[in-house]
Length: 552
Ligand code: CAO
Image: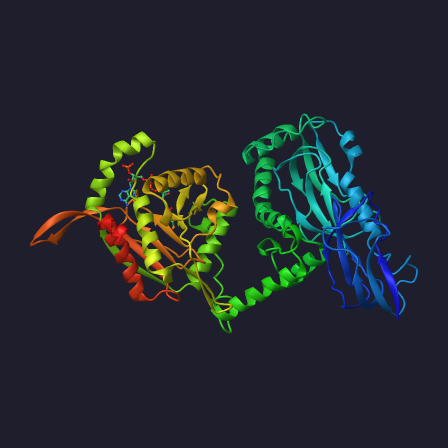
């Protein structure tokens, strides 16, 4: 056995590139063609495979290092001759041509852009891929009607060893998409038709136009007929779903080997949490994700599909019964639907109904109206309900947990952060108010209003929607007498609040009109038993009935 240096081959790239993934460890037995590292330039991700088998004796680089041609990546105690003796060395592997192609792809067809007059329609074709042919389209980052800028990536290709981004050669709007994910393409293949912006030789047009504007713009510039416009709209709707998926996958940061593994296992990379450098998804993340999914399946449905449910029958053609109009679900609708379904199927729900007598609370709240106005705060019942729930969570800590069924753990939380369901034009969002137990009613009123406003303006940061222990869903301003809210997993309980109403209550020998607030507490019966469910709701009710209970 001889020890050899595995070096960075000619990458056809100017300057240094980053090591973004190390695919082996010291001591690993490796075979020819096993990936050693993944390198990344501005435009391409390249896997460096080994040409000889043997044992990795030493790794000379770590993730994040910058390397150039000839730099030593690892020492290999090689067994046998390199697989390709004509290669410059063991370690002269890689996708030289693919990488050059990627660089070429990155610079694309500037000349093509020059050839076409602005305001016209331009065919966008696959550029010179450095000789590579039949390269797979793995991501489609455009759909009909999209307004794009020059150099914006519209397509990602992947060969065995390299991932290449294909940028748009000019600004404009996409009039036609000629390829789909999974297609194999070669130099010269048409991928899209681009309606050039009037100022395509200067700055790109604003990308903030709405989809119908885009269609109109395309129509105007390419002089489309009415049937063509209809056809264009249909195509746009058809690609939207696929594009949604591609966009989410595109946002995953992962090398070709990882993407290949994910495809083989049918894993949507956008759902995988990357534990590599800068959130990069590595092979172990994909494997851990699959393991997690399998164990969830085992827990929820031994011997069945994910939930042991029969497949839903195909939908009928509703247009047979009257006029219909299908509309693509947006990302938030898809996410909400998935979360609700998962929680509904995984959590054994029980809903406890109760009523809180808020007659005195409402008198107190109204007595604070002037102060609220002077503070510029709207004082609704919600901050009081938040405070009551925080007190109940502290008194009944079995509600302030998450369940880890995989590891059979109950995770007790020692903080009290409460989510508040907010109805927005874009759908349901749940901002989280931190340390509710430590805040005053005025603080909570202010924060509720600020978070609800941010939610409706779609300005919430992800961190503002994370870390909740419990959720309140208040439909009190709308009506209804009770409902069964779905637990916002991984929390174990949620309080639904309906509209208060007067009812006669028998007190001291006579009926008195009392203002009652309906409470609907749904909880996860794995974490909370029925007695505690009743205790929690009556604890909340007793505080709302008499705020002095907060001091007890
Ligand atoms: N009974 C009677 N009136 C109530 C009430 C109740 N339970 N709760 C609130 N109100 C009143 C308020 O006092 C206010 O009246 P005034 O203007 O006269 O003071 C009015 O209803 C409107 O309140 P609001 O909705 O502006 O404020 P809020 O603090 O009660 O709620 C928020 C804020 C963000 C929770 C709410 O606006 C919202 O979006 N609710 C929907 C939540 C949701 O979508 N849940 C479903 C989730 S799926 O399970």
